[in-house]
Amino acid sequence: MENVLFVCVENAGRSQMAEAFFRKYAPEKYNVISAGTTPSSQLNPIVVEVMKEVGIDMTQQSPKTLSDEMIENSSKTINMGCMDNESCPALFVKDVLDWNISDPKEKSIDDVREIRDQILKEVLKLVESLEE
Image 1 (cartoon, rainbow, N blue to C red):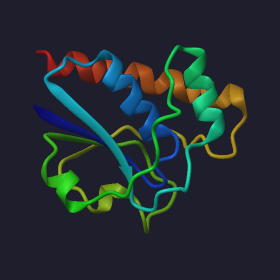
Image 2 (image 1 turned 30 degrees about the vertical axis):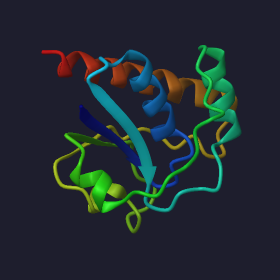
Image 3 (image 1 turned 180 degrees about the horizontal axis):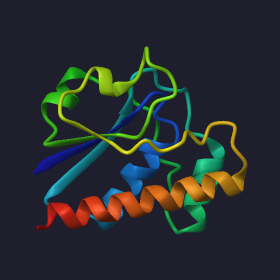
């Protein structure tokens, strides 16, 4: 199994959506996890709601702390984007792919839907590149 890691700061929105989409669309030979440098206590409820709209239940997912072990054991690490430079995961991870996606925190539901759709497109491109 190859591990794919999605990282962001709070692990409450973007990386969680990416994990859920990757789990749905990637080949079974991949294991996926998401984590944050300073994880939130819970998922963003609007993120959970907009994912439910596309048939993905995220109620069993929860924010996790990024560990050295996660980084070392991942064949591919994707940074979702950073809002502050002090806790940006890209500072701690070598060979990271940076998607630079807006943080859904404190955004309207319509904005979060746009972010969700952008993440889906990126995940599908990633899955396609892994199959080549």
